Image 1: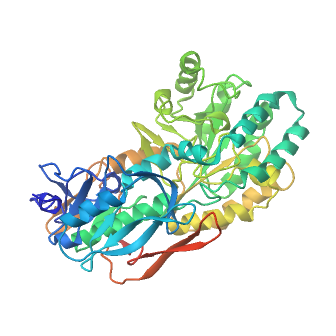
Image 2 (image 1 turned 60 degrees about the vertical axis):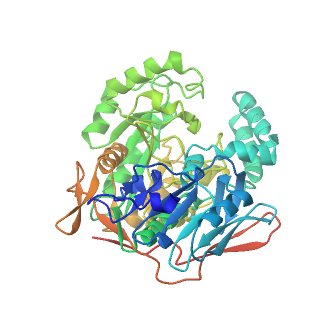
Image 3 (image 1 turned 90 degrees about the vertical axis):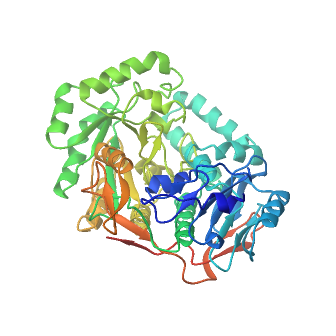
Length: 514
């Protein structure tokens, strides 16, 4: 029995006629309904999502085998993961019926075509890689291991040397060195800064091609509660006693514009009176734990420090954590025991740990919700790069257009200098009247993401209805099958300076919310 025949087994009444031979995590996270075939795939290396017409199926490579792509390009997207070899593709094509045509090349950094996305005239798609593997490699920053193999470790050694001698240097010297090194960091090719769209472009591509397979609009759950199309989340890391004493000055600016925020405190670096925490919570703000001493040693000393950090968390009623200097380790973060973490940037080459999870939406790391910092930190904008607040506003506009989360990180320790507080006020004022903006606290985002994940879609009385803890809040969205072909979905430049284009049928699909 062929792969497509397996994927066509009856799926039940709660799916839009879609059946898969393997779970597709991208669709699971969107809560898009589909069934699973009871039988496994005899093809081994390939999985399929198929509807009534197998020629419209979505097929993707699952390995084992293939070639390891380290930043290969599919149009504007970067692929980090295993790509089917020519032999793998030949074996698959020999097993399929009907016409299949090359649609878009997968190109390595030298400009050589290494594989292809294939398309059938009836709307089927073959992806020569596993989209779930690519997304996982981005979120976990596993791609950094591939990148280090490719570009070498010179930058990493320079970074380690700087942070080893940093405590011995006057602050003016530290800043001068950071500014100089920022020119080296700016040469990083991935993740692109200030925006890296690969993860979300790939998610939208898979969603639209799944709608093609269904041959009808495919329902899924929108990212934000009904009535909201994006989110603006305000957070602060209070690094010193100076920052603690400036909390009310910064908070007054937010309060006057109608916002609330979260304040991450360091319990063993400066005194944190209970009255400070109680006051912040009384006025509707949130308090989180920002490490224990802000010395960059929390994760490497987790066994000895974690009990104290958790004790402070319980004392403050804190459910969120952010690591000082955004130090992070994928396997360690869930062990912290907090409901959410916010230590990952979406993309940031200028941090002590450069990189990023490439996501402007929350996601899960086992049972912990991760809330990425998606806005360039104030210290980086004003001190290291010496830019103005237009950098902030442009990023928010981008995230608003893409339905993302603009999670801001401002330090009261530095923001009172010069006109930085005025710049922050301008940012808040620019979007305060947007009726589609949601302005939750981080803990509210994490709670929402859990409710959304526990909510599913069911076909009831001929309509798709949400069922579960978020049923009264979620918006049901629909991805529509492609209706046009030959639209340029993106472009990129390889390392030889040559521009490549991705011609995908209809690009990301049209989406509507109800």
